[in-house]
Structures are given as C-alpha cells and as structure tokens.
Image 1 (cartoon, rainbow, N blue to C red):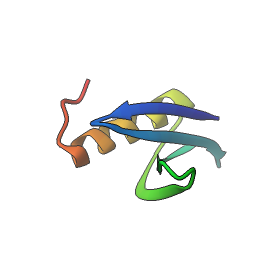
Image 2: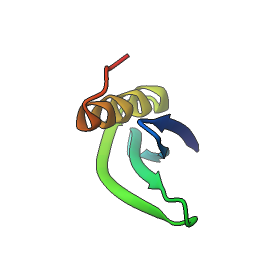
Image 3: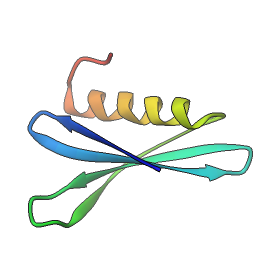
Length: 68
C-alpha cells in the first residue's frame, strides 16, 4: 500500500508492507522526471496506520515541518 504526501513543495510516498508480526513503512520522494529516491526513513509498528504515521513524523522532523 502507498500513501502520497505533498510537503514543502515535494511529493513523497509512504510505502507499507507486512513485516513479521507488524508493518514496515518507508519513504520515497517522487521526482519530476518520474523517478523516485529512497529517503532512508523507515518506521515499524504493530499496525499499518501506526507505521505510516511514524514514518510521516520522521519525514516532517527531517524537513523541519510541524508534526501533526
């Protein structure tokens, strides 16, 4: 599953996949030429929603944006 975010003029995907007894979410930046770059952010949690939220918080901290 993927969730798209637009933050600070850039587009990102949060990709989630089952991992063991929980979920792993990672962040990719979508580039204007159609490629994507791995940001190096990963987060794991028991549920997909919690993993996605943790990855988004890490991305916002990296970009120095307010964390919701």
